Image: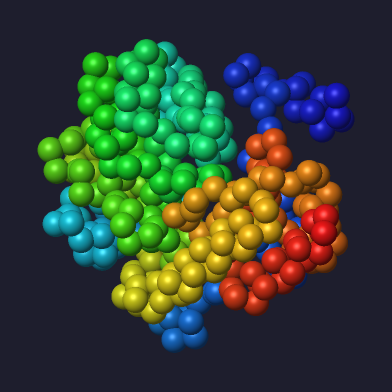
Length: 366
Ligand SMILES: *Cc1c(COP(=O)(O)O)cnc(C)c1O
């Protein structure tokens, strides 16, 4: 046992947290970072200036607590999402991870169960354990797809209190059809399950992949979770949000910390949403690089999963570890997400994709 773990274990830590490992994507100092699905384009200059101006005016009021209800932000997010949503449908937090944690605090907890379908986002089990919620898993087909019939049968068998469906799914990039979400919602009726659809990557979807936002009317147990970390290029600002029936937001008001969204965060998000079009202008470019990566990896004889996100999961390498190390040596960091034989790469700028593909090609047997 490491000394660090021994020191930790001397503390009166909760038993269900003993032996757990924190979330830890490596943060290495490498020229080309394609490992955590960030938007590598950065913020346009005029949006930077707009954010600085809005933050500057918020600084004058920092002696006061911020608007606890982040009213302006909820208005702007409702308008951005469309689908007839109003501010009462919106809730936000410091990243969608905080929003997910609040959902688990309100609807999970001791004696309750959250269910997801791996391989999926590695934070779900950690958020479950942090809130004392049991975590159970369903299974997917070998190509990472999930049929409505299979999802419904597995949900009926486990009767979870919370179902988390990630689409487009991290780390596979694959999207679920709306029929899967509808089937999961109906199958969850017996256990009165909250169904969370994590759409962190929705903006990168192909035009014919619809958002589950259109399923919200008449489904009060359905929650669509979104983030400004990916398409909006604001991972560092920590802003995530959801759309759902107004009573869902009321439930989360019971568990949120007072004034959880700082005035600085609200100012940043408000300014960014005023310039949503400019911030999202790189999305088409990123989608183009994503489709190019899928195409070129296929041509190289590798096995990329179809992707609706800003990253690609690919297999078909004889020695993925050697490929990961070879890329790193050349200054390109990709992610080994622990799926046997696979690596995941973020679609960055055209130049970053050029370098990734060139180095990768040199590492594969001729
Ligand atoms: C990146 C990501 C998020 C976003 O997390 P934030 O806390 O909003 O930065 C949420 N869900 C999934 C599946 C992700 O990959």
